[in-house]
Length: 299
Image (cartoon, rainbow, N blue to C red):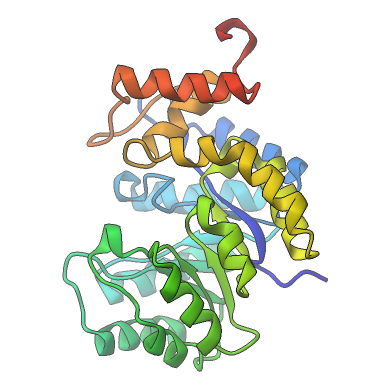
């Protein structure tokens, strides 16, 4: 049986209606598309889900819809992080009630705690909930990095089970895989670095590209899991332009533009996110065309 939160977890976008509300029907439809494509778990309410502009009620409702739709077919690793420990603890409890089976908790941002502060923050969350917690380390967005030694210390806490490592620092990734316990899950937070991380002990990816190409991400990661890196590299080489294209502007702007062009969602953002620049959209459409992903009318 697969260990929860290994393989491919898609960092789900949050679809909105033209009126700017959460598109609940699209949340359900996109979740079913993911499960049918074979993804191993779902990650709602993170950066890709425009978490900072979701209301508390929308976060809970998103998880509630997903839990109702998937009904245990795959785990739900719900975003529950932030810079106020007390608020994160409250949100963690609400996510559990809504049906989350684990928590993806981004490091505190803006207030930039020390390594000791990071440890105590995650310790307090872990002591407040029975749910497994995956630490989300993304210093490019938060301004703070979880150092390998600190992560190893967190790994000793019973329900801190893994890390989404998105530092972009391959040396740090190697050190983390070396220093943490064997059963501690290390997954990539960068699609393009999935295979390098898996080569040194990583267990998969929490993926942005999974929104567009879930089956291809699953095929790549499962090939790497069985040691067939030649097959995994072939897929990686083909889809790398999309992985990189998803970050030509701030995530999730490119991926939502791409999904709209694929006919999957309405291209609606919440400020301060806005539609990509015309030149960026042209690049996105060209990548989709080359991969055969454009909706027929747009080819």
